Length: 193
Image (tube, rainbow, N blue to C red; front, side):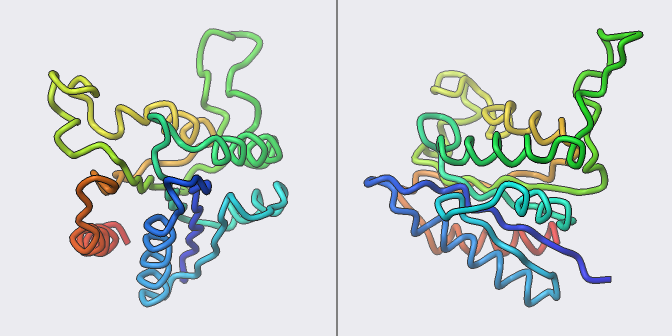
């Protein structure tokens, strides 16, 4: 049976970040997955979207790839707006309340997700070099990429999605190695899909 993949480009235009790399990674993933006989739909958060149609796409998908740059140690505000609008439109479809009961309101918070069985991955472009991670003396204090994006992963867990390993392109502004990044991404996609 053919699997469905939704590619969400979370890049928001900014003068110092016009989005070519994130767009290229989305296209690479799209072409790679179509060649493997996946059905693919795409969204770019900078384009107009209808929140209810986005909920339908998310529910259609077996896999979701969130492609995003890092702006000030987080996702762009337009991508956060997309998540806020679309996920709230998905109340009762993507998640059913927060999972707790009135009889025991201290337990099971975040277990009301209705998207169980669906998987997602996060593909990130960073200005930060690889060495900024996993070194306690550096800015991320020895944390890895998924530690830095803990909040993002918890939001996906809240709606029931299962996390696949994240992919990162590092140092994309000061010391890019785009050809190597593309090769690593294709290898990554081969291992995941």
